[in-house]
Length: 440
View (cartoon, helix red, strand yellow):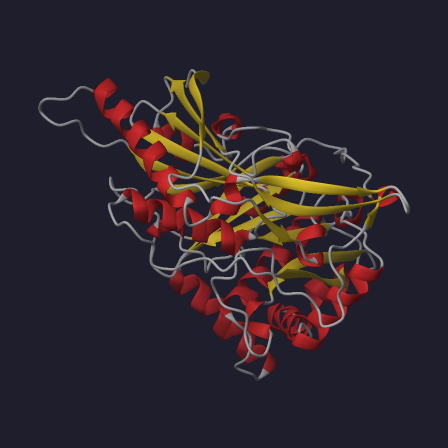
């Protein structure tokens, strides 16, 4: 694998039918809490289409890139805030800043690149995710507050020897994982030919009953702390078949005498136990799993599923290593189930109202803990339904940026009912997981 990235062109893509007047979208505490963290970075690997009898590879790739630019422009008509920037209003009287989405049509960034000598097999076959994958994403190093001057959405289409990688980044203040895949799916739908998308986004924000906006954030709370890692980390993708997941769910529910433990709760408990077992922690050592819960279905009346913004709240489950490993899979999954069930409409409203009164964006120092796991993304997102017109993707990968030891990215697997988990950890931990018979 040569791994030389060449950048062919960079284009600003604007909505095909721009809005006549500038719109402003206020941001909720759910949105604003992410100002100091990084963009969402997800990409899809496709097999390269076979050229027609009168085409060569260069003509085919040029046509694909031009088509993706055009379809992206048409998609931005439906997702117009993504072509904007973050706006700010500085309040000198109390040294605070208000952030909002400025729908000014400044445009999204589109990069066309090529990875010389890199094949699809070079990406899929290695045990660890190759480092070159991080170069398939644009604008490395951005934090969400950079959206004041940088694009809220950027795309990089990288040509491989026999494949195409479409890497997409989205400012996390503008949308969560569900919103990200709503856009990605809609773009591919427009690319296939329709003039409209199946599911239109809802940009109207939901605030707490007593939340006054725009929310004023003290300058003292806007301190970015770049984390330092004590040891190098790698990424490895573990694939769980539908049958394996069903077995874990049945085992967890049987152990607890219930039927309320979900497949995902059982799988995450299984992953957590294996990771800590591999690390050989003392029994009295505390370990945590940070989860992000989608609040759309927890409001009454329910928020629309097409709500485009951040609608997730973080929850943490903490156990001592002895309890985690000694009490069994069912116990851990059941504790996770109980923690998630506390995220009600009342809890959502309380969070929004209390955060607005004392706004403190999440910093990396508050989410990085030793012997902790962090779950991001969801297997419910329709990753493999993202078909631009030349077939479904063969894999999904995450972008570069700040890699946290213990970050676990959950996604839909290529096979029906399967789940992929991309684990970021030390090579020693990942190797131990590979050698763990119960886990594998």
